[in-house]
Image (cartoon, rainbow, N blue to C red):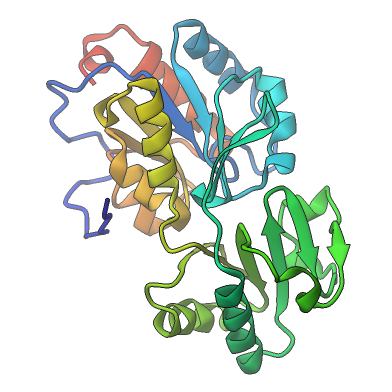
Amino acid sequence: MAFVHSPSQKSYQHLIADPHGRKKIRLVALDLDGTLLTSKKSITPFTRTRLRDAMGAGVKIVLATARPPRSVRDYFLALKLDMPTINYNGALIWDERRRRIVRHVPLEAAIARKVIAFARKKYPELLVSVEILDKWYTDHFDEVPEYVVETAKKFTPDFIGPLSAFLTVPITKLLLIGKPAWITDLETSVLKKFAGKISQVRSDLHLLQVMNPTVSKALALAEVAQQLGVDRSEVMAIGDAPNDMHMLQWAGLSLAPENAWDAVKQMVHAVLPSNDHDCVGVALERYVLSETPEASSQ
Protein backbone atom coordinates (compact mmCIF):
# COMPACT_ATOMS: atom_id res chain seq x y z
CA MET A 1 0.00 0.00 0.00
CA ALA A 2 1.59 3.27 -1.08
CA PHE A 3 0.88 6.72 0.28
CA VAL A 4 1.93 9.77 -1.68
CA HIS A 5 1.41 13.23 -0.28
CA SER A 6 0.35 15.66 -2.98
CA PRO A 7 -0.75 19.27 -2.58
CA SER A 8 -4.34 19.42 -1.41
CA GLN A 9 -6.96 21.10 -3.55
CA LYS A 10 -9.26 21.55 -0.56
CA SER A 11 -9.62 24.56 1.66
CA TYR A 12 -9.03 23.60 5.25
CA GLN A 13 -11.57 26.10 6.55
CA HIS A 14 -14.61 24.01 5.62
CA LEU A 15 -15.43 20.44 4.80
CA ILE A 16 -15.98 20.78 1.07
CA ALA A 17 -15.40 17.23 -0.10
CA ASP A 18 -18.62 15.73 -1.43
CA PRO A 19 -20.26 14.17 1.67
CA HIS A 20 -22.88 12.15 -0.21
CA GLY A 21 -22.39 8.45 0.10
CA ARG A 22 -19.99 8.75 3.04
CA LYS A 23 -20.68 5.94 5.46
CA LYS A 24 -21.37 6.23 9.15
CA ILE A 25 -18.17 6.49 11.20
CA ARG A 26 -17.47 3.24 13.06
CA LEU A 27 -13.80 3.72 13.95
CA VAL A 28 -11.99 6.85 15.17
CA ALA A 29 -8.19 7.07 15.23
CA LEU A 30 -6.72 9.73 17.50
CA ASP A 31 -3.21 11.07 17.75
CA LEU A 32 -2.27 11.99 21.32
CA ASP A 33 0.12 14.93 21.62
CA GLY A 34 -1.23 18.07 20.01
CA THR A 35 -4.56 16.39 19.27
CA LEU A 36 -6.39 14.47 22.01
CA LEU A 37 -4.16 15.97 24.70
CA THR A 38 -4.14 19.66 25.57
CA SER A 39 -0.90 21.59 25.91
CA LYS A 40 -0.99 20.56 29.59
CA LYS A 41 -1.20 16.88 28.54
CA SER A 42 -4.74 16.44 29.82
CA ILE A 43 -8.07 15.51 28.24
CA THR A 44 -10.82 18.08 28.63
CA PRO A 45 -14.09 17.11 30.37
CA PHE A 46 -16.08 17.89 27.21
CA THR A 47 -13.91 15.58 25.13
CA ARG A 48 -14.07 12.83 27.77
CA THR A 49 -17.86 13.02 27.70
CA ARG A 50 -18.03 12.84 23.91
CA LEU A 51 -15.62 9.90 23.85
CA ARG A 52 -17.79 8.09 26.35
CA ASP A 53 -20.89 8.88 24.27
CA ALA A 54 -19.23 7.61 21.09
CA MET A 55 -18.12 4.36 22.70
CA GLY A 56 -21.60 3.94 24.12
CA ALA A 57 -22.91 4.20 20.58
CA GLY A 58 -20.60 1.38 19.49
CA VAL A 59 -17.85 3.49 17.91
CA LYS A 60 -14.35 2.06 18.32
CA ILE A 61 -11.63 4.44 19.53
CA VAL A 62 -7.98 3.76 18.66
CA LEU A 63 -5.06 5.79 19.98
CA ALA A 64 -2.38 6.20 17.30
CA THR A 65 0.81 7.76 18.59
CA ALA A 66 4.59 7.91 18.43
CA ARG A 67 4.67 7.07 22.14
CA PRO A 68 5.46 3.64 23.62
CA PRO A 69 2.77 1.65 25.48
CA ARG A 70 3.97 2.71 28.95
CA SER A 71 3.48 6.35 28.04
CA VAL A 72 -0.07 5.76 26.78
CA ARG A 73 -1.28 3.51 29.59
CA ASP A 74 -2.69 6.15 31.94
CA TYR A 75 -4.83 7.70 29.19
CA PHE A 76 -6.00 4.29 27.96
CA LEU A 77 -7.11 3.27 31.44
CA ALA A 78 -8.67 6.63 32.29
CA LEU A 79 -10.81 6.52 29.15
CA LYS A 80 -11.66 2.83 29.68
CA LEU A 81 -10.72 1.97 26.12
CA ASP A 82 -10.88 -1.57 24.80
CA MET A 83 -9.07 -1.41 21.47
CA PRO A 84 -5.40 -2.11 20.67
CA THR A 85 -3.18 0.96 20.56
CA ILE A 86 -0.96 1.97 17.66
CA ASN A 87 2.45 2.85 19.09
CA TYR A 88 5.78 4.05 17.71
CA ASN A 89 4.10 5.51 14.61
CA GLY A 90 2.78 2.08 13.69
CA ALA A 91 5.82 -0.08 14.41
CA LEU A 92 3.85 -1.74 17.22
CA ILE A 93 0.19 -2.62 17.60
CA TRP A 94 -0.27 -3.33 21.29
CA ASP A 95 -3.07 -5.06 23.20
CA GLU A 96 -3.01 -3.04 26.42
CA ARG A 97 -5.69 -5.05 28.18
CA ARG A 98 -3.69 -8.26 27.84
CA ARG A 99 -0.26 -6.58 27.75
CA ARG A 100 0.77 -8.41 24.60
CA ILE A 101 1.95 -7.75 21.07
CA VAL A 102 -0.56 -7.78 18.23
CA ARG A 103 1.96 -6.84 15.54
CA HIS A 104 5.59 -5.72 15.70
CA VAL A 105 7.59 -4.44 12.72
CA PRO A 106 11.16 -3.76 13.92
CA LEU A 107 14.17 -2.19 12.21
CA GLU A 108 17.26 -4.31 11.63
CA ALA A 109 19.95 -3.66 14.23
CA ALA A 110 22.64 -3.42 11.54
CA ILE A 111 20.75 -0.61 9.80
CA ALA A 112 20.21 1.21 13.11
CA ARG A 113 23.95 1.05 13.86
CA LYS A 114 24.77 2.47 10.43
CA VAL A 115 22.25 5.31 10.81
CA ILE A 116 23.69 6.24 14.21
CA ALA A 117 27.27 6.15 12.91
CA PHE A 118 26.34 8.34 9.95
CA ALA A 119 24.44 10.86 12.07
CA ARG A 120 27.07 11.10 14.81
CA LYS A 121 29.86 11.52 12.30
CA LYS A 122 28.10 14.71 11.26
CA TYR A 123 27.02 15.73 14.77
CA PRO A 124 29.09 14.03 17.51
CA GLU A 125 26.98 15.49 20.32
CA LEU A 126 23.76 14.06 18.92
CA LEU A 127 21.72 12.19 21.54
CA VAL A 128 20.53 8.71 20.64
CA SER A 129 17.74 6.65 22.18
CA VAL A 130 16.47 3.23 21.18
CA GLU A 131 13.10 1.68 21.95
CA ILE A 132 12.75 -2.09 21.85
CA LEU A 133 9.12 -3.00 22.43
CA ASP A 134 8.32 -1.15 25.68
CA LYS A 135 11.90 -0.64 26.90
CA TRP A 136 14.16 2.39 26.55
CA TYR A 137 17.91 2.06 25.91
CA THR A 138 20.52 4.79 25.48
CA ASP A 139 24.25 5.32 25.74
CA HIS A 140 24.00 8.80 27.23
CA PHE A 141 21.15 10.09 29.35
CA ASP A 142 21.34 13.87 29.38
CA GLU A 143 18.18 15.70 30.39
CA VAL A 144 18.57 18.82 28.26
CA PRO A 145 15.21 20.51 28.96
CA GLU A 146 14.48 21.53 25.38
CA TYR A 147 15.26 18.02 24.11
CA VAL A 148 13.20 15.98 26.57
CA VAL A 149 10.47 14.00 24.81
CA GLU A 150 7.13 13.42 26.53
CA THR A 151 7.93 9.86 27.59
CA ALA A 152 11.19 10.98 29.21
CA LYS A 153 9.28 13.42 31.42
CA LYS A 154 7.76 10.48 33.28
CA PHE A 155 10.09 7.54 32.68
CA THR A 156 13.84 6.95 32.87
CA PRO A 157 15.89 4.62 30.65
CA ASP A 158 15.76 0.90 31.32
CA PHE A 159 19.42 0.64 30.33
CA ILE A 160 22.27 3.15 29.97
CA GLY A 161 25.44 1.78 28.43
CA PRO A 162 27.40 1.22 25.21
CA LEU A 163 25.41 0.91 22.01
CA SER A 164 27.09 -2.42 21.38
CA ALA A 165 25.41 -3.81 24.49
CA PHE A 166 21.88 -3.50 23.15
CA LEU A 167 22.06 -2.93 19.40
CA THR A 168 22.27 -6.65 18.80
CA VAL A 169 18.60 -7.36 18.09
CA PRO A 170 16.01 -5.67 15.86
CA ILE A 171 14.73 -2.44 17.41
CA THR A 172 11.29 -0.87 17.40
CA LYS A 173 12.32 2.78 16.99
CA LEU A 174 15.48 4.87 16.84
CA LEU A 175 15.39 8.46 18.07
CA LEU A 176 17.96 11.06 17.01
CA ILE A 177 17.77 14.10 19.27
CA GLY A 178 19.58 17.43 19.02
CA LYS A 179 19.52 21.00 17.82
CA PRO A 180 16.74 21.72 15.32
CA ALA A 181 19.32 22.70 12.67
CA TRP A 182 21.01 19.30 13.03
CA ILE A 183 17.70 17.48 12.77
CA THR A 184 16.67 19.49 9.71
CA ASP A 185 19.87 18.42 8.00
CA LEU A 186 19.57 14.79 9.11
CA GLU A 187 15.96 14.63 8.02
CA THR A 188 17.20 15.02 4.45
CA SER A 189 20.60 13.36 4.58
CA VAL A 190 19.60 10.23 6.50
CA LEU A 191 16.69 9.53 4.18
CA LYS A 192 18.92 10.04 1.14
CA LYS A 193 21.69 7.82 2.52
CA PHE A 194 19.36 5.01 3.62
CA ALA A 195 16.60 5.27 1.03
CA GLY A 196 14.45 2.16 1.02
CA LYS A 197 16.01 0.84 4.22
CA ILE A 198 14.19 3.05 6.75
CA SER A 199 11.13 5.18 7.27
CA GLN A 200 11.39 8.37 9.27
CA VAL A 201 9.10 11.00 10.72
CA ARG A 202 9.59 14.33 12.41
CA SER A 203 6.93 15.49 14.84
CA ASP A 204 9.18 17.80 16.90
CA LEU A 205 11.83 20.25 15.74
CA HIS A 206 14.54 18.57 17.83
CA LEU A 207 13.64 14.94 17.13
CA LEU A 208 13.93 12.54 14.19
CA GLN A 209 12.30 9.11 14.54
CA VAL A 210 13.61 6.23 12.44
CA MET A 211 11.82 2.91 11.91
CA ASN A 212 11.40 -0.06 9.60
CA PRO A 213 10.74 1.12 6.01
CA THR A 214 7.26 -0.43 5.96
CA VAL A 215 6.05 1.36 9.10
CA SER A 216 3.36 4.04 9.22
CA LYS A 217 0.33 4.84 11.32
CA ALA A 218 -1.75 4.32 8.18
CA LEU A 219 -0.69 0.72 7.66
CA ALA A 220 -1.25 -0.12 11.32
CA LEU A 221 -4.67 1.56 11.29
CA ALA A 222 -5.59 -0.31 8.11
CA GLU A 223 -4.77 -3.59 9.86
CA VAL A 224 -6.86 -2.70 12.92
CA ALA A 225 -9.78 -1.69 10.68
CA GLN A 226 -9.51 -4.90 8.69
CA GLN A 227 -9.63 -6.98 11.86
CA LEU A 228 -12.83 -5.17 12.84
CA GLY A 229 -14.38 -5.48 9.39
CA VAL A 230 -14.43 -1.68 9.07
CA ASP A 231 -13.99 -0.07 5.66
CA ARG A 232 -11.68 2.94 5.38
CA SER A 233 -14.73 5.04 4.42
CA GLU A 234 -16.03 4.36 7.93
CA VAL A 235 -12.86 5.65 9.62
CA MET A 236 -12.30 9.15 10.98
CA ALA A 237 -8.73 10.16 11.85
CA ILE A 238 -7.51 13.27 13.67
CA GLY A 239 -3.87 14.35 13.88
CA ASP A 240 -1.65 17.40 13.95
CA ALA A 241 1.85 16.48 12.79
CA PRO A 242 3.72 15.07 9.78
CA ASN A 243 3.78 11.59 11.31
CA ASP A 244 -0.04 11.63 11.06
CA MET A 245 -0.21 12.49 7.37
CA HIS A 246 -0.36 8.97 5.92
CA MET A 247 -3.04 8.03 8.43
CA LEU A 248 -5.03 11.12 7.49
CA GLN A 249 -4.68 10.34 3.79
CA TRP A 250 -5.94 6.80 4.35
CA ALA A 251 -8.99 7.58 6.49
CA GLY A 252 -12.35 8.30 4.93
CA LEU A 253 -12.67 11.49 6.98
CA SER A 254 -9.53 13.36 7.98
CA LEU A 255 -9.42 16.23 10.47
CA ALA A 256 -6.77 18.37 12.13
CA PRO A 257 -6.76 20.81 15.06
CA GLU A 258 -6.06 24.48 14.44
CA ASN A 259 -2.64 24.08 16.09
CA ALA A 260 -1.55 21.48 13.51
CA TRP A 261 1.40 21.91 11.17
CA ASP A 262 0.40 23.91 8.09
CA ALA A 263 1.13 21.00 5.75
CA VAL A 264 -1.29 18.85 7.74
CA LYS A 265 -4.06 21.45 7.73
CA GLN A 266 -3.75 21.81 3.98
CA MET A 267 -4.44 18.12 3.32
CA VAL A 268 -7.40 17.32 5.59
CA HIS A 269 -11.13 17.62 4.98
CA ALA A 270 -11.64 20.11 7.82
CA VAL A 271 -9.81 21.98 10.54
CA LEU A 272 -11.15 21.89 14.08
CA PRO A 273 -10.61 24.15 17.09
CA SER A 274 -7.21 23.67 18.73
CA ASN A 275 -6.23 20.85 21.05
CA ASP A 276 -6.76 23.26 23.96
CA HIS A 277 -10.33 23.89 22.78
CA ASP A 278 -11.86 20.42 22.56
CA CYS A 279 -10.89 19.51 19.00
CA VAL A 280 -11.64 15.81 19.47
CA GLY A 281 -14.87 16.43 21.36
CA VAL A 282 -16.03 18.85 18.68
CA ALA A 283 -15.21 16.34 15.93
CA LEU A 284 -17.13 13.56 17.68
CA GLU A 285 -20.13 15.78 18.26
CA ARG A 286 -20.14 17.12 14.71
CA TYR A 287 -19.32 14.05 12.61
CA VAL A 288 -20.11 11.01 14.77
CA LEU A 289 -22.79 11.78 17.35
CA SER A 290 -24.90 14.47 15.72
CA GLU A 291 -28.11 13.46 14.01
CA THR A 292 -28.31 16.61 11.88
CA PRO A 293 -28.53 16.08 8.11
CA GLU A 294 -25.07 17.56 7.65
CA ALA A 295 -23.40 15.19 10.08
CA SER A 296 -25.43 12.11 9.25
CA SER A 297 -24.49 12.45 5.59
CA GLN A 298 -20.80 12.32 6.39
